[in-house]
Image (tube, rainbow, N blue to C red; front, side, top):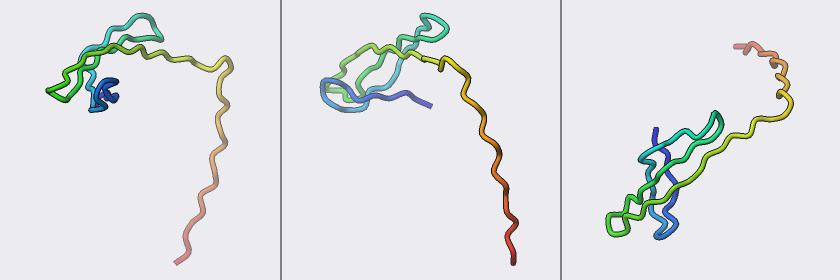
Length: 68
């Protein structure tokens, strides 16, 4: 799987080339534009924010048997 984000200069696909873990919940990701004539490189930050309280599990729905 590849991370892709549009290039801020030309709008072409930017492909993640390197990822650096900063902490347990954040990463710095370096992207490079896939358009050879542009070739712009840019850095983004990815952070996760877990919910304060656990998300409750849903009850399983009943499955109905099909009648043939």
